[in-house]
Image (cartoon, rainbow, N blue to C red; front, side, top):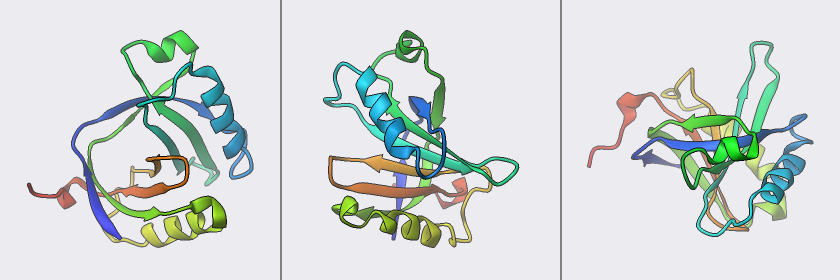
Length: 142
């Protein structure tokens, strides 16, 4: 595990999964089908429990220009800058259960932000970076 620092907020638009975890793939497929070009765009998965403990999952894409979310009729979310505890999973689809196991491990860190969320970042088609927002006092010094 390592601490990654996001240097700036990231504005994304998203499709909310109908269920968790079974609706995740469908939400990502729907999101990708709406976007004319995925080249150079970052994709994310954002999850957190609602007040009842039910997990909310959002398949998200970084906005390429201001107002893009409105063009598609989608809501936006701001991925907050700051420190995240993280672990990169190579070829995660060969064992999809490792994503859940990794987040369970990351969530044991005593410095997690109680108002934070779990964040999946997809750097390519086969890997995933699992991240959990930490309190800002864990920010990496440059």
